[in-house]
View 1 (cartoon, rainbow over the protein chains, first blue to last red):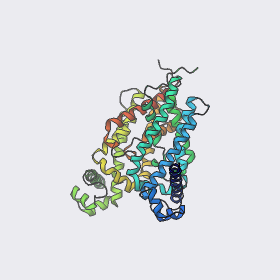
View 2: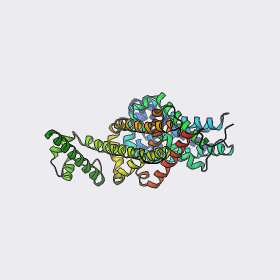
View 3: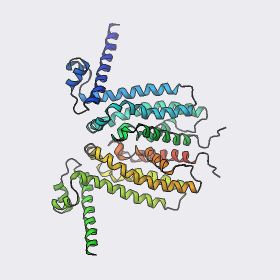
View 4: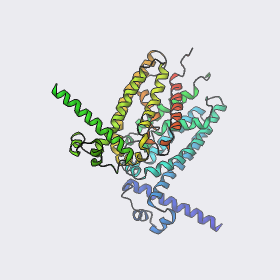
Length: 207
Length: 207
């Protein structure tokens, strides 16, 4: 019991540190931010941060992991909404782009900086994020296939195709200028989703 | 007449310089390559290179421009092939990914290096490349609409959607590991293209 409380507190501190990273990325950007700044922001000792994260790189990458974990929660919520399977899948596709977009909205200028510095590590991490997303999207595709709403032979392969087809709209692939244009990005992902969903329903009887 | 010959020669030298860049990116990578190396590779003086390109950044970006110019030529060729409009559009989509893929195949390891260093400039350039591609894809979409092969209200917007939906498969967005998997990338772009094209033909009478 005592140990469980300790583990819980450990996670709380990690969360506070990641909140601090989020604030500092907005204020200083990745390169200028130091572990000292972060300790001061959170109000704890630098040593405590190193107990949780081995390096500045790692704390920033964990911050990105947290954005994706929250996105996955959001996608699970949408999957349960009382809407048609097509509408839910569309909303999930739009959400996977816009949730990330909004999560980095306060540091679009420094995102370039961050991604230049951590490109390689970020790309490796991204693979794991996509794998988790694929499982969620495969589930709703299976549901749509079962109810004859979608034509889809291989749910995982189709899920991967849907992710590939919207990945270029993720913040990682956008310039700082493009990251300033929320409405345009939302319109683009919506059009892409519609076209893909039309593809998934081709040849089905819609009465 | 004399002036025209001089202009032609100027372009030949530029082309030779860009061939040199291509070879050196494979041998040294972006960061290690110097303008001295390039001059030695081409067999001209360093001063001559600076007459054509103001900086190492610029010569590498021009090298990327040339890849895209050659791709545009290839896309125009495909557009004229004696195949159905759907098949030509599919081949154009696959080509826009695989042509770039094959163009950087000999320096996948150093591509990361190059894109980290030139990310900002590259993203700005990329916008112009996409604008040219959009025009070409809009033309074939118009053709498909006229022959009732596609359902498409706004050819330019649809062209842009097709590019967004395949952009995440371009070398720029791939890790070095992914760049080693030609068959997987080709399969992914082919699946994406099929799904998009099914979307473009939904609701059309296909007899």
